[in-house]
Amino acid sequence: MQPNRHRWFVLAAMFSFILLHQADKLLIGPLTTPIMEEFGINEAQMGVVFSGAIVVGAIFYPLWGYLYDRFARAKLLSLAALLWGATTGLSAIMRTFPGFLVTRASTGIDDSSYPGLYSLVADYFPPRLRGRVNGLLEVAMPLGYLAGMVLALVLVSAVGWRGVFYLTGSLGIILAAAIFIWVKEPKRGASEPELQGLAQMGDYRFSWRIARGLLRNRSLLLLIGNGFFGVFLWQVITFWFFRYLETERGYDSNQVLLTMVLAVLVLAAGYPVGGVLGDWAFRRTPRGRMLVSAAGAITGAVLLAITLHVPTGETLLFGLMLCLTALFMPFAAPNVPSTVYDVTLPEVRSTAYAVLSFGEQIGSSTAPALAGLIAVRFSLGNAILYICTGTWLICFIFLLLTAHYVPQDIAALRQQMAQRAEIERARGQEAAPTG
Image (cartoon, rainbow, N blue to C red):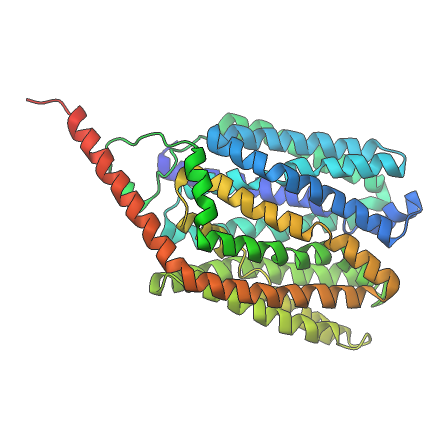
């Protein structure tokens, strides 16, 4: 397979990984009610189930990041897919709530396997394309959520929630074999502009010295702060919005399906729109990606507050406002990893993204349980409103601060890559045969 063709094959394979993995991970949202009924548990206990997988995922993020920067990312992604299949199958087997709680938490091990995926794709596509490429990749997240929702709502009556878990777990094992056989490992940094056209490239691998230097990168530290709060709203909406529609809006299963399908399709469009806008703004100013992200955050917060205050009987207006909110929700998603790679060296990018994701998971790990507690005391609508709009406003501040510092950090990386290119050219000249 030709190199340019293979990079699109890799993109398609990674898209499939995210799509199927998200379907497996997120279908527990629409399956919440039958699971709660079978085990006889309340919202607070179910919130602990949600949070357990998040905590386990957070713990494993640094390990995955380190392994990805040391070893072949494609092979490790294959392992992650295998783990996803195995742990999902185990959670379907359990017949007691404590056993289900433990095995469902174990699914968090592979939930933290994404740093290597984005790092691998970044080595196939140059910086000027990364926003739209990441946006295209991340379309798979809401589509995976949609696929999980459809699977749950369509199949649960026929095969039960356990049968749905068996199906998505099996797909993980099949994908593990496909990635292991066909996805090739690129050179780290191969897509950087300064290294284009070189006859040969060194093999850059993880270094503790360089990794420690990440702690001095202001843009990365601010993005970690943003991530700490930024995933609160995703966790709450992912795990509780179905039940909110069912119990507080009074929707039946058909209304839930129609409302969520429309909202998720618009949400899916928001990823590439945010990525394309981020790339467009980035070509005009190095602050561009962060400014687009900040605009999405503040707009999303305002629109969500309006949406949740729509009267219960106004189903059409509620659906329209929910879709409008969904368009702006993911604007930061493709631009944050692109910015991480704009300011970090290729051999520690998986580690950098893993540290960022660790902050996201640690910060948001309490969100489902917190929302469950607020719901028991007040309502799910209030839980969603307070948690989502509050954290969105905090993220707006972090993103503006990142926009202030990121030009210097981008310039520093480009200087480092230029120095590497000079070293590689000098090595090439020394190795060239003399006449």
